[in-house]
Length: 124
Image (cartoon, rainbow, N blue to C red; front, side):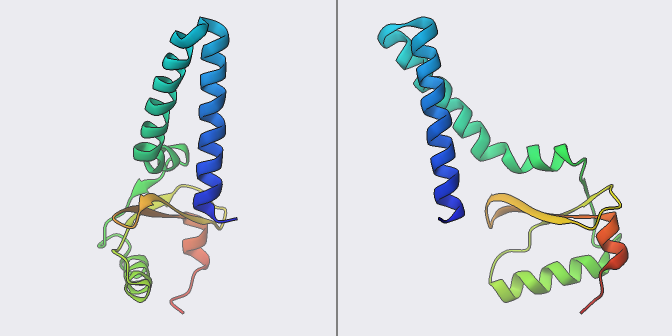
């Protein structure tokens, strides 16, 4: 099952849960309408802010090309090979070797790497 399908299924499940809870608490068609509105607002917020939420959760800080020229060169090269725009680049203050990508589409994307992975990564 593709990631987009999994995400859509999860959002549909959560939307259904919000609508059901609103129906139980408020009751009747008013509860359903309130639930639909809550689900729509929640889904739109998640869609547009999920990258910022993920980056904030890891305390990721944006990094400039001057501060990390090797990392920028690597991400730019990989982006060109994948034929996508270069994402924003962040560093996570952690000694664990890890990295993640986030964003709703290639034009609104970010890559975050930990300080730990920067210590172990090679140009190759």
